[in-house]
Length: 144
Image 1 (cartoon, one colour):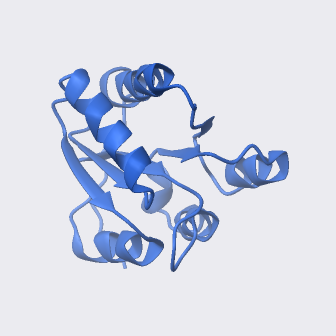
Image 2: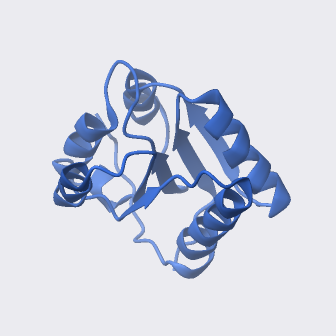
């Protein structure tokens, strides 16, 4: 049984990023947090990093350079990457985009709340499920 030790956050909005980091501090999260601010950084992370301990990708759809939807498509066709849980955390309420996210392998789609307290509750629920409750497959492979 494997428990995650690392979270990757793909978020370019500094205000949202600060809220996420604040929520992690509030819940005293014991995990390594890596932050990328655009899709190109995200792709490079997977090319250059051992993903063995990665338990969650928190993905914004509106990333510069390579958007979140294109990232999902890349994960979906990769036998290793598609095993990593991806939670799309977006301000979009576009139903068609949400459907596409699930079609491309997103494990969950969550709309970012406007209420700061709700924001923290949602981050707590996400991390509780994906890092404490969920069991991940063991995988060791090079990602290209």
